[in-house]
Image (cartoon, rainbow, N blue to C red; front, side, top):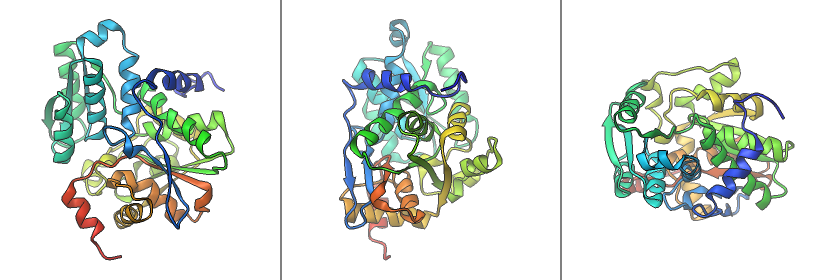
Length: 320
């Protein structure tokens, strides 16, 4: 479709689908009843989130020499778990850098897979700086959380599955953080079925992607703003360069939702689909429910279900 090296080719998505197939199962479509909105249940992966796709694709794309040295990644939680799990499965050493704002549940889940955990302050630079230090010290390959083609190619496999499972889909809602998920899905959809619209959704407290989309260039927000949202997995302060190229080209719109909408979506997902969604995982569903489109013609990506029990119980027990 283009010679732009920042844009994800369908061939990379197809190759990723073959590469990760032995380790990553196809997730089901679950309909909310009576709403009719269909959910792509990425929370049902072994690590509870879609990030497993990109992690396996990235690690399996390394050379034998690179795999022997190990990997390092930085993440607030789900990418951390995914890389740790993939490295454990493939017999590789793994270090993970996590912010001090990460939920304890996600830190402990990452440690469970044998990763060497390094906690740093939540700000704009500490994670990347520490990751670079560890890579230089140990010879690790850096597995970026979203700004990398293997990561986007892995997430693009979600689009392949949705289009094969829901031939009548007209609109796909995806959460937006660093942009790897939205970039990968939108690029794959555009090349497989360009009539399907892809809508990005993010919390209003972390609306850097919407601002970027409106302005036509990457806009960064302050960490002190992003940290206010309950959606801990979407507290990234700006889009990655590669995801942004694909979002700008292929995403049709980006909308925002309030934290109250996210909490309400978590309750409806539990009642109407019998699934557990973490706040970040419920964002796309909150956007789809608020958008006004025919829910029977839409699919929303339930991107993750890793949530602290006390937080989840409190949200589910809230009055409408």
